[in-house]
Length: 274
Image (cartoon, rainbow, N blue to C red; front, side, top):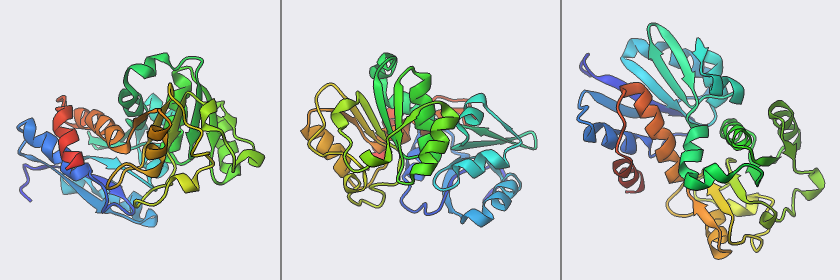
């Protein structure tokens, strides 16, 4: 690759399913940034830090980070934004001035994807599903917006740890198999349930018949089509936001950090959904 090319990538394990390369390369082309190029790197956890530290020498100016590396991305950074530090995870790395800076665009990207409803979260009941890197961002974003957040995670002890750290409540263990989704105004799945086009809803503690009009349901997992969580929520009359819209919104914020340019969201949506 020519030395004038500015390289970007998404780092994950696995990462072959990611639509970020198609989406980001389309956005770069629309901006006329032909000297920029975005790829994907599958990297195992044990090799993550060494890889990241070597990327700037390979012409990389930044990277997105997905499962399972978001907490490790924060740990490897020389400096971090206030949001990334508060969340305890990063999904965006910026390489500049010989340093690695960690950012988190998952949290604002989620609120961007929710749209106008994000401004009405104060005092609303919210349910966050998952306590990994993405779940940390979801809990922080909802709590910062003023929502009354409850957290569920398959491993209850991990939910308790994150809830204590971010000041939210947890779903009691005795309710892990029978949570009424209708009790919440917003529900966000940030767990791995549904990854690989599996039946995500069957892995979550939600009654499929409990969704209702007036609530917003977000599934951050994306696949070939709407997941079973989104399908059930739509049948119940809820507003839904799929993982591709969240991907577009957080990706747009990352791209603006790297390039200093605001990408075309419609271009990114078309490429992500193609």
